[in-house]
Amino acid sequence: GEGESGKTPKVAHLNAKSEYEVQVNGQDGSCSIGNYLKLPIEQYFISDPDRITKISQNEFVFQLPKLKFFNVWVAPGVTMSVEVDEG
Image 1 (cartoon, rainbow, N blue to C red):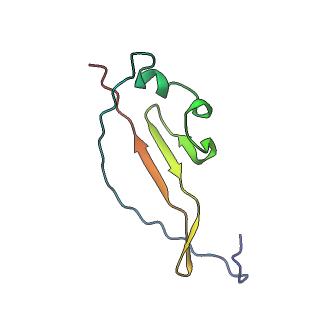
Image 2 (cartoon, rainbow, N blue to C red):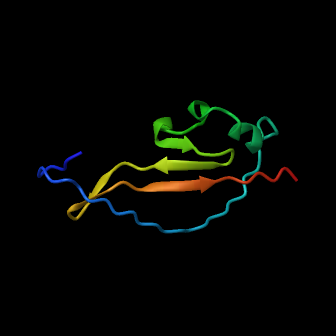
C-alpha cells in the first residue's frame, strides 16, 4: 500500500533478543500449564486474543499496537516460547 504522502512506505526489520525465565506453579492442581497451553487461543486469559498467534505447540507471537517513533511507524512483535517441565 501507499503511505500518507502517496509514496510507497519503506520497511525495515529490526531484531532484538532477550530471555526471561519464570517458574509458574499450578494452583491447587486444578489446571496444569501443559493443559492450559493445549486450549485454543480464544480461551486463553488475555485482554485481546487477536494480538496473539500460536506458531507451534509452545511458541507464540504477540503483536503490540503500532506506534509512531519520531517519523517512523513501529509495529513491535514479541515471540514467546513456553517450556513445560511436569517434574
